[in-house]
Image (cartoon, rainbow, N blue to C red; front, side, top):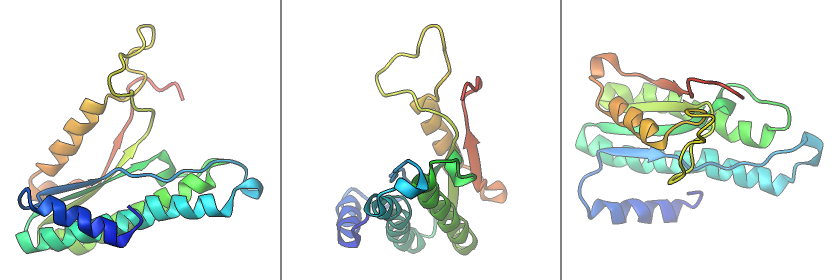
Length: 174
């Protein structure tokens, strides 16, 4: 997602399936550790994937949705979109950047009937195909429940569009 030509080709390929209605950006770059020990190249890659990749995908989606006159662009953030934890500078920077991108895009595109929203996933996601732990049900977020929320935001009436949605398990153990 950090290569402009690749992202453009992806959208051109998807165009063959029909007009774009919704784009979801989930890619994330992450590197963790003490600031003095972080590998600068790993941090650069995290920024390229997590923030610049969001820009590239958002730009391609915006071209298509503006031509269509409607649609949604949804960005996946994390708790790190709101606060940086000790040892997480390499994750917080791209997530903060993605959130800023989403805010700017929402203010620019909402008046043009394009819904832009940012999701804060505040917790661990249950791995696909893995049953929840029997002694700790609902400790992680269900991927299906997350997808249902994304779809509900896409279907919102424009008189009450949400910009930021925070999802977390009902039992917080983190």
